Image (cartoon, rainbow, N blue to C red; front, side, top):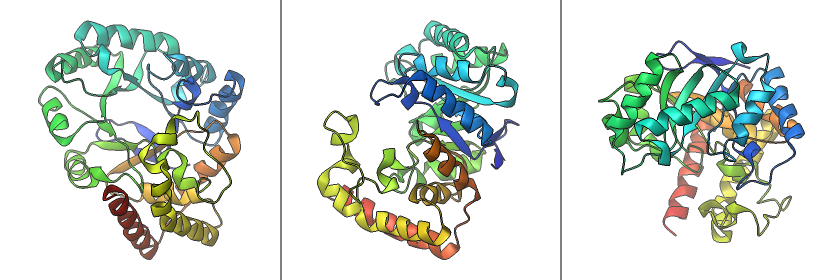
Length: 310
């Protein structure tokens, strides 16, 4: 595993972050807690020492699993979690942070994100509460997830944003236009979520290996619609071709592409499968040539344009 500096924080995080959304259940079909405890511990063994969760993942259950799995390893890990958009009033921010600390079995949160902005609560109030938590040593850094450029710039008036967590992948590239340049200029780290587009970029939904269930929350999502699966086929085929050439998986190529993008710090990838976890960890060692990056860029942009133009 390789590690990178997170903005100006002095924190070093693994290039692959273990995403813990699935571990909380909720929208996802969850494995047993025992399976997921082993997955987190396996990630640690593979050198993935950065873990991302949220109070909203399974109503705090994901945080509990993370805290239990990392007992005895806390000083060697970076843990990020998030405050929900309905908890952004000052008193609620503090209560949420204290509850997350308890569930995570720690006395400090390394990265504390605003999960989603809330137009009914001012960023001045929320950032004020976060700054106090930082001053008291309960959190180390402040992050923002799912923010527009304007919201990031507004938040910056009230305190330092050290890292953002946007949806970013070969099929979600909206941040490249304005947010990536801003983050590069301000030395703000980027940790991508849905790094393999909720599974689409693995290719399993295009090659017939897996059929999405009617009960799966992704079934009606943009990228999983039947007409859009067809428009993604060329990109999925290219990923498979490059995977064969590098003797890795399609997921690893998709993650490697992310890690070679401007201002990127870490790709968040979630799984409850240890074999997939091992594959994902290898992505940090995959080096794509300039010609391969150009092909992925071109085919990806074409797929996005066709999907968005539908």
